[in-house]
Length: 296
Image (cartoon, rainbow, N blue to C red; front, side, top):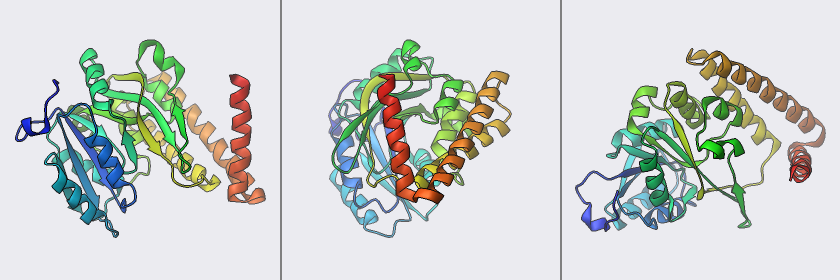
């Protein structure tokens, strides 16, 4: 993966294909694409899948593609994020595939650093890094993955089951997609299940302790958002259990986390009924903040 100029790679198979599913993303898509064009590593293609948008996303995506020959746009009727990722993978050319939401950003060294990380770990097929959460007021909050991943730079299946999170700007080899069978289009947490199934099939996951991507959050979180996400996590873990791929130890971790998440759902639901949606979210955020400060 040597550095090269964009004009040097036209017609060649790129090192990375960056996959961007876009549905009504007119507010964020241009900045997301700019973050890709600003990479210090040039040998990439960007596949934007317009997933049946009803705003100006299709026209914006076409303009962005016209500005750089490495950008391609695929349009389809709305199939959800999982369906858009499936289309993006099948339209992509590279063997290394990068997942990027239409409202997230890659920092300039992402592909350079991840490329070096991948070369250093030829036994692995799934790769993630640290990053930041960015809020509407511009605050950047570090997103650090589980400390125990840093010891060996490897995330095990049990680690991932317990975390309910896999990072931002993840990369996987194309063979993982073929083995897993793609993304489940009917699920809300289709990306999380994809990573879980990859590890359940025996693929190794190597983690890079560098902040290389940004996940943007554009609205105040509500308790209802947490309930929706936790319900999605429960269903995802139930699907993983039903796959029959888990060892006894991993199965134990999955069942314990399902029980924990169901308790979280009950607590949020009860607090919301008393305090309202935002009131419950503020109370829980306050408790979490005090707990985090006590641990530091």
